[in-house]
Image (spheres, rainbow, N blue to C red):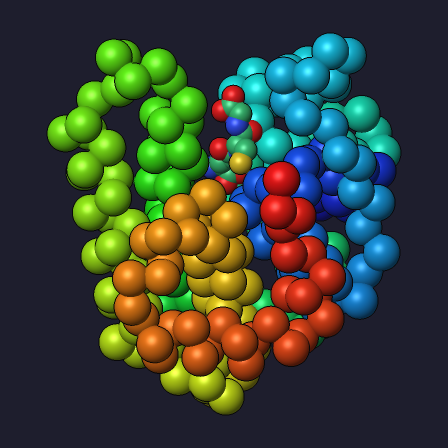
Length: 211
Ligand SMILES: N[C@@H](CCC(=O)N[C@@H](CS)C(=O)NCC(=O)O)C(=O)O
């Protein structure tokens, strides 16, 4: 049975600080797609996110047929299928796995930072110092790994822009937003790579506001 065509996106529900949403926005911008984006914090009064995504998370992509797509990794895949050029998820198997692994690392870095930030919002007596230390370790280990490979003027996979670079910029950018003191501990190569990569309009124009 032939598969039906994919519905067009109607809105990317997101927040300006979400690293996962930023990754999707960068992908759309790199593809030259004018993806309508709506700031819709998932727990805000009247937010549609919970009705569209039982995980109540952004980004959630609302489609013109009323259905939705999540999470950010699936949204990236969706955008890639709708607008294959330029390809950001390599098709060559080795590069593809590399790029997807970098995405997992960028997202995982953001996950650890989100958890650390949320824990920091709790009253001091309800915070778990060991658990915070574990999240901090994940952040530091990932930044150290990136510092070992990232070089200015160099893309992470296959000598050209891929999802790997965008996911990395999103994850590290979120550490810069919520855990600037961690990013300031060192990582000179990573800082140089970021400075170079931030020259791209898709990266610069999606930088999270300092709120
Ligand atoms: N794995 C998800 C993570 C999404 C996520 O955690 N989003 C955060 C914002 S940065 C959120 O919506 N949090 C609200 C909640 O967890 O209730 C993705 O890649 O899209």
